[in-house]
Image (cartoon, rainbow, N blue to C red; front, side):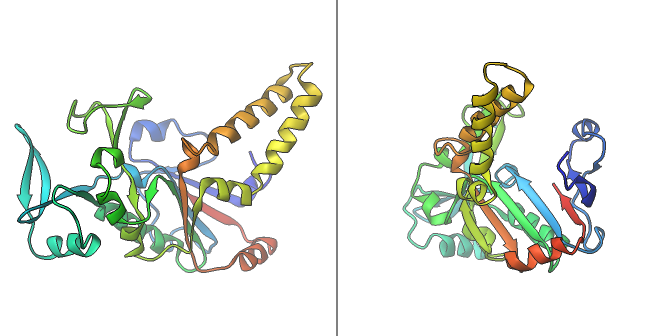
Length: 270
């Protein structure tokens, strides 16, 4: 319930009907992004938190004969030789790939960005929070199981092709593949983003409240203490602090502040 709640139109985008049914009152729930122009006049913000790493991707491997796609059959992994545009693209992304190197092809993440940019048009922004790699070539230099990670029961899972349907398969986002759609206007760490938007002041205020009310132990004190802990988790470089925040927009910050100061409502699709 932020002070600006009355000026916001919140649209939550969720594929699962069961999860859409769990959304709180006061928001719109839908299974797909709004169509271009459907949200009315801007500013419109499409916010994606840990979305792109969760979108299905293809996996390619450099072999002695060239690039091949890693597929899965009843016997496990199999390699299907690539040719034409797919092979050329892999070579363009990783010109000096060593034999055995693997890379993701994140076409569907790029397609999502393309669609999101049509939603915000010229007067909004797309904001993405995720684990990223600056280039596909940087991923090729690392073991592929470093950047293809699985999760199950709120913890790390096993090999990606083990236990089909029982674990979440994720992949670090290659920024250069998104930049092929459109280079981000800003690319900074989650720590930098949060501090630019007042995190340090919120933590300082939490510490003050905790100092004043810890002896009382009321809800205000507990909330202040929780704020301090949550801020530490969000800025931990070994955890969530390793996220990058990518932003696509055309306007500078001054023009955005002028737009909000003029009382124009904002619309968000999450």
